[in-house]
Image (cartoon, rainbow, N blue to C red; front, side, top):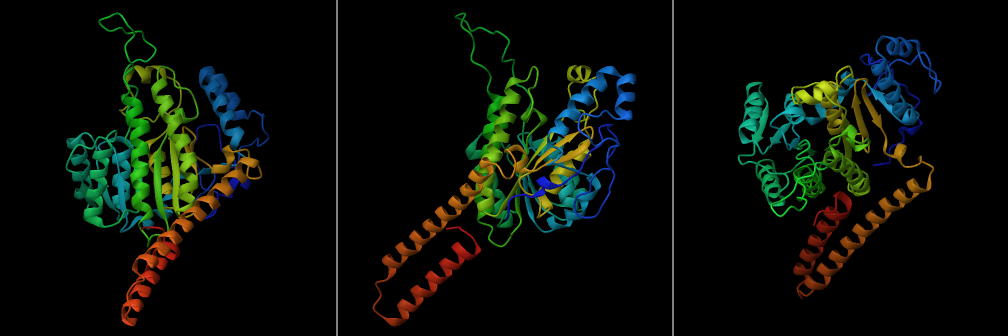
Length: 410
């Protein structure tokens, strides 16, 4: 699996908030070019937008700045084009945490619609059972983990993954979707009975950062042992708060920044293990999940669509050529930002360091493999009879094939 090379793609996106339209063939399609592709030039549509709604225009201008900063590397994706690779999920085992509602439920239904064997879990057992019922009603294949799955608990997730392996034998896609909003008010002074500042509530960090890391780590273990599938996938749920601060949500922002850093760091391990990894980073999405107070604060600001989030998840899970992307979802649709776009460019020294890291990880694993094979040879090369030695050699040859040629599973 090679590092993404789409940084040279010269695509642009409309900043008017219009729905994306397909302009070409392939697994992803770009929106039609903006009338003004020169950086810093305001289009007529943007001028009209600012006149009709100054606050909205200011938002679009600021957000356009974010896109302009990486548009030479990124590519806009038409949500409809992601359906082209959905069939790759047929017969695959897809594990999704936090599938009792929201993005998790919507993607579980989408994946099952393409014939995936979905294994779903949630802390809210009634909610995830409802998701399972909806999937079964539509003819989908689903296994509902029968216990509340607390993703902040390592043991809980170990049991959930064991449940998936028990029923399907292998895992092909893992979606670390479970998450919560801001729990508590970190910057609000609260005192204990002794008049001392109270310890912050850490639920947001435990679920959104540690829980997602647990899902990824256990998921990586099982994905790496699926030797037959050459297009395994690990999908993270980040947020636009992974890149930006979130007013009144410092714990949430901290966790989402952290999971983006984690994704960028284990990218190298995933690359070496032939596992695709991507992270979905949605802006506020127009669903009932948005609290009334937050909705009031977002008045006049365009929101994203859940269909675009699910499309980004689908592409991340099913497109064998899609790896290392930060998938930004906002009112303008889907923007796929390749790994190298945020690391000083593909020719930069940071990218070179990353390439060396991948090579080093692969070499380290091969040395470990060779050590295990040598150890097995020394340990078992004791039989005196020829037939026994042939049996040992055959077993060692099978081990070599399994660990080096097909994979690195012990």
